Image (cartoon, rainbow, N blue to C red; front, side):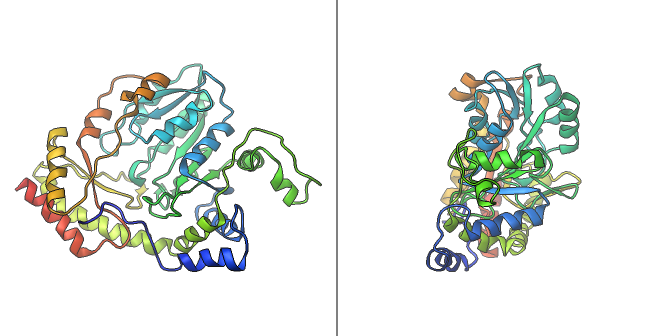
Length: 376
């Protein structure tokens, strides 16, 4: 069976984990490897501050606290996303306002955002699906005109760019995931990018259980104490060590995944030209990171049959999000603004093919042959 995902592994991970344990004697948060990861992210992507977290969810939760949301404040987001995008803001009392997506990228439809704004709106949360950027110029313009914050859910977007800018660095905050299904992994983990320096000190406090411990380490106070809201968001330095080995090979991993993505695209293009399937769209100005390769079948029935056919051919393929607005929690904590033209329909059609670092040419050929066989 060709697996849908195999966590990335470049070879130095266990050496660095051993170094964290045996040489550094520092396995809790913010050790030497955490600092190396922070520096790498800041230098590579040009953000004023990056902080590793225990997950992409934790990064979103930190962003929600930093936005200083109050119960009843509203947050605009797409319904086609993972639950973490919503729960992070719901946990601080915000109401969720879902809007429709674009069928070409599966990203939030920027033309639907403004109609969803009320006097309670505080934040826009664009989700960069499959590592392909949302239309950020339009979104940032809307945010500026209405005095709103922007939190980029760039969980899938590490190494992707929009008009030359790294995803996660355009909004007020950006949130990455380093889960085992992502292009770069530490098993469970994430990072928050703080793009407005005015929020850096509070971000450090929130991440350190609400204490000013980082100021103490910088000798700015003679002792640290509880000063604000917070949580235990520091990632273990062992996990950071594992991640750092992959960041050192970030371009190698990126190029390998892009080669697989491009191969799929080329080999499946004839089926797309015949109108049998729809392939991903990469808008002008967007550089993606080959986080996933998906195709769209005609409808839910055809997708279900295709997944079963691929399984019989030894290929693990999966669908993706069930729209949040149709879920029990989505109905309880939010509402859909406007008409659901594409969110449910396109979600029902989408199927993801195996995609990971090290996917072989032979395996890709087997996947493509299985897809072609179904449509033959």
